[in-house]
Image 1 (tube, helix red, strand yellow):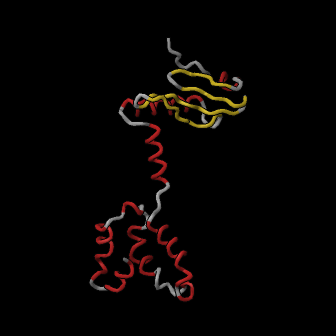
Image 2 (tube, rainbow, N blue to C red; image 1 turned 45 degrees about the horizontal axis):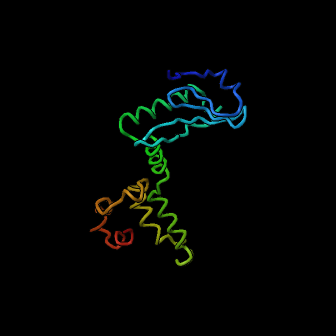
Image 3 (cartoon, one colour; image 1 turned 180 degrees about the horizontal axis):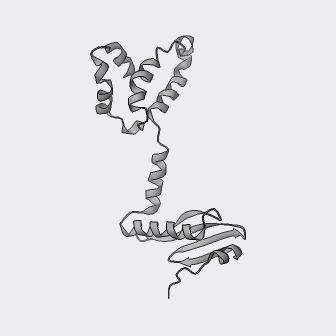
Length: 165
């Protein structure tokens, strides 16, 4: 017989160190009586894996059950919930065009006259590129995006467009 919702909030609070199972793969691993972490055991592509669901007591029992249910739902839909979370975290840490321009400017500042204070290097980018595609991730920018961004100034201000490119 499978355990289902074996833990209660009061039991969780009073449990000592060790692994404590709630059912359906959800467990609380406590290192000390006052701290622990929620873990979910899953079988992904025939391999048993464990997925962290958050620290206890920051994540209460009800939220841990919710997170476990969401992960099991993704698994039923054929999505590896651990890999999906890693992809999401990588997306959140992507480098934007504006950040790349800023970092490049800082790196090249020593080579520029008067440390680039005249703005001749950064000005075309901050006027024509950053307002349009500054929030895009660098890996999402391709030649079509660049063409669309520089098209309006290409014929009137060819030198500026060339510098921006």
